[in-house]
Length: 311
Image 1 (cartoon, helix red, strand yellow):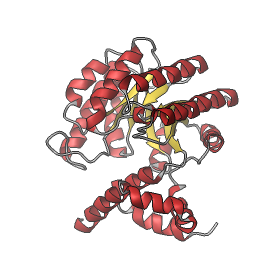
Image 2 (cartoon, one colour):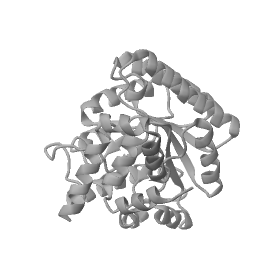
Image 3 (cartoon, one colour):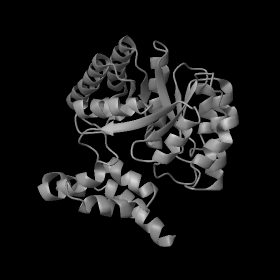
């Protein structure tokens, strides 16, 4: 167990190593090797590839959340240009008639440059997705950005009723944030939380405290009848929550990440529950893939197999 935790910490450190990320991107051989590992978890590198994957998942019975990867954009012009990619995604998804929502990190579209810029770009996307009949989902980031994210979400909810937000069961503050979010429209997506946070503000990973918190928040969401996504691959948790899942309510869905929880997703679908797969795409996949492996270091073995496979 010590070795596995060390492996997880190493992967989290690699995810934040900007120099290594740049070296991998610049070296064709390393980039090809890394992509073999990444494509298990990534829906493609272009809008077209992501929408093609979405259509396949829809045919299997899954709704999809599409997220164009990128975060911590610190250039205003680039943030606005990246917003155009999200707008194009919304337009093309509507034109193809796929069942998907559009998800984003607010820091990708300028919120860490200036909160008003982030709000303006998010408003443009909210207008586009509303016109297209798509849900828009705001992802959660590190705790240094939680207040900013909830501030932006509150202002969007003053104009729109289709903009959802993600909350993390790990964070102690969720106990106070959730009641406020339940007064707002838009789906609430509950995740355990993957960011590296001190135990002074977050439950330890894989702890009984975290499991209990997730179960309590999920139960409250399901019993409230508020639109929600129960985002977990933990089938034991989902089994405990089943008595609270009213299949005639239309208010909840079970969500899992592309490439993870395949058997669990099939099980929930076979039981008659609405399911959704979270699909990321784009070229900024390094941090995302490293974090997915870090969540379960046993995935390093799968990564080794994927890296050595030849097309």
